[in-house]
Image (cartoon, rainbow, N blue to C red; front, side):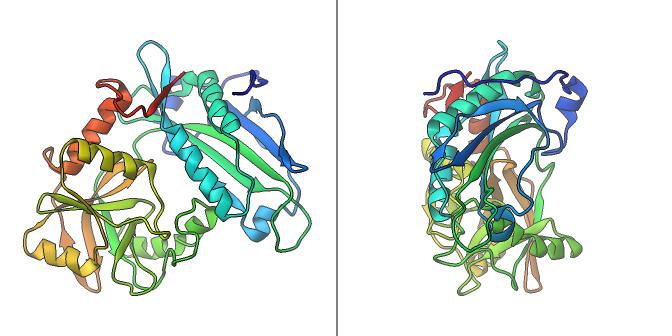
Length: 352
């Protein structure tokens, strides 16, 4: 546990209720951010300063060799003026695994978690009060070393920034199963939350959008037949009342929301199968009337129902997610825990 983190407060807050409660996802940042630097083989003390531009080398290593990673999770309001942060320990553990994969220094929990709590407490009034909204928390770590050469940087900067956020999706998402591009291969960085994974996905998403879809459904990189992720999210299918989701195995990001939903499905005694599922099985289940629902699962969207899915000229359409669907029930349960309506029986919430 750190001693009190030094804080330099902004001289003039930008927060207004109108700005806070109506900001699109990721468009407006809160008043402050946390910063800490890795130099000479150790972490310096973190500080909290006003959000804004900063000075780095003109040739930072992250721009050349891609040592840049991030996390994302949320804080929610409490009626008494407090707030809770959802599963920061899990996000810290995932960032530590990503650091190992990307040859970057691990951020201590004393900086990541204590810094998060201090920052959220300081900018508590930026947490939206509207249903479905939250304060999105974005820790990011990137290489700042200037000398060129394909090797790990000797200096890094860690930042935590926050932004008020409404719902990421307002309705069902339409997906085009990707046939040309691949998100991840065995032995690659698919399980790491690094910026390169997202940069490599953008062209596929753009091309899918030109064809009238929101994003792509990623298939495996070897046989191009097994479902892996839904755009930027994990994916789940409900077949004959059983929730089926691809297993983690190095090519799929181990989503915190995915893990939370699976835990709640077990609590609700819903059958769950973590197994490989082919795109052909998805279409066959739909044709047989056995595919009850499908959804992307992620921090920003939480549960985003899939409305339309296309693959090699064939297309299926799914009805809106019904309230009695296992995915809808798990989503309601998750929201009730985060809002304080029911007990936090899994110890997921940290209160400020």
